[in-house]
Length: 446
Image (cartoon, rainbow, N blue to C red; front, side):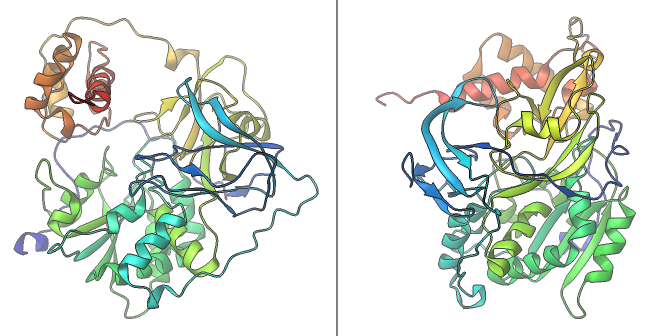
């Protein structure tokens, strides 16, 4: 494609929030000690929840399959610790509601070492077998969306992938977990990338990294094996550079049309953490049972980058980091732009939890909202060229069906509009309400 040769290092629109990465960007990753109790929700990913494969009272070992996929758009769950299943039922979820989950009590006398199971040779697997293996390993998008990774590998007939694009932008403020992965595990990143590239039949691997991470750019470049079709592309620092359609535009100069996916322009996009998880499973036999989490924000006593077993209560993470500072008011799971506040300290760390950010009263105090002045700043900020102010007005009027004609489903809820609005209108929250209503609305006859 001729347009692929015209390189761009950024995209149009977007915003420039302060980075706030200095708290943790130079802190090596630590491994968090194991606790007593773990909760593994069955619906940690986009799609269909898992189906339990264990019973209450059953002993489990670390890395053992405990829930099978409930459908194609679903990913397996594995025990993060050696211990005993204490309960299968409703547990408090991140949003405050109740969700089906498996509760596990860790064995205090176990070493908690993983006894890796035999993994089939990835090179000898057919693409269908490889896709099934990724699904059964429980691997999902680690950048926050938690979309089952195997679904991206399932290509319609006639669709070919030319470029594997690895997202190392990490454009959200505060978060540095991907940055530390690139610095500390570049070999695993490149191993996972080569596995994915070969299984997809891609011509090359491209790793996009924002220019504010020069040490990561240099480290990856130094570790690229001779002759491997891998290149690193420094990107302009701008939010949301890490959105897959924005990164494709920045790296290749190609715009993914509305309603289409990256595969439709020959690109497969995966997060740094996802690619490392691929290497950990196919080369080391470890399914997705832990992840790197950035713990930061003005309310954290000791900021850190931590390897945290999935299912660990947020309370345990905060206690390991010295507890909350006086005046702490809110904990956000994920980044400040797209993350969501946790309803309780007892909710667990999930597969898509890239960060736990603690904020004091001032940043979380609800600001007074003023009428829209039609200034157009939300239009200038929206990287998808939508009209956020119109969508917000329609949402308040509950004109949800009509919003589909204005491409509400193309909104990725990046938060640029709310960030740019001088009237403090919660635009992205209003759009999210409309999308949630549309997503959960039943068709006639259901």
